[in-house]
Length: 291
Image (cartoon, rainbow, N blue to C red; front, side, top):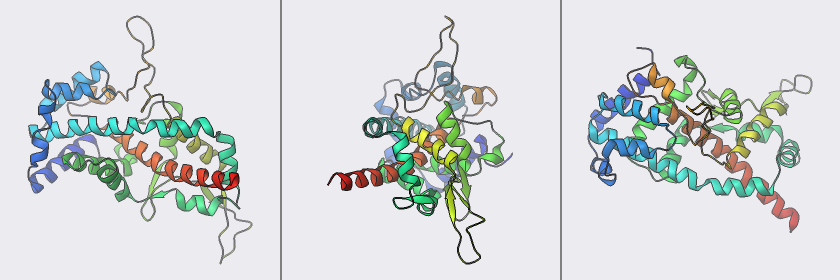
């Protein structure tokens, strides 16, 4: 079995579960939903009906123990709910500041510049797990699954899967996101100026197209949906544009669960990590101008 595919995540998480033992706090997750596992899956509003049914079938065939499985689905609901509540913060920023002014400020060497941006767009892999555990206060077996999914995102090219994302801004961000062994998750925001650089001093310049792609993603964080849905024709001929990251195509090709939805959430956490730092710095700079 090729490494880093969805079946690898299933086996990796099961191994960690067996090695670490059970968790009493997870065993009761299903009790909070009267419909049990089906209710938990349906509570993840990202999933269309067909996808939810496919996930239910896959879950019933999963080698994961029921308490582990229910814990994972319960915390999928919790994580998304908490992330959705934060969207208002991005909406307020995007309504107050426009992309063009922010881009010019980031490209201004006296304000930000290439060197600072190059360092900013580096995120250690462990930081993603820290955010899930401490920012969103999720410390259960779901973290075991997400740790494997983070590694899957790191090695996503090795899976040979098609692109996960939906919507042009999320797709653009996924295409520029990569992983560096020393720097962690990165985007190629700066390139070395061969004319100005010397053997003792490297001079970098901003890749404006990459910066613009990221800022498009930043401004999409305001919603209206946490994750976009690709156009899908309904029986009535209308497009279904709800809040979904419909992994049903992945599930149709496999009898096991799909972690496409989780991979999209991981990339969203990474995008928010960088967006939060930029927003904080830009707000501070504007406050100083006003004062």
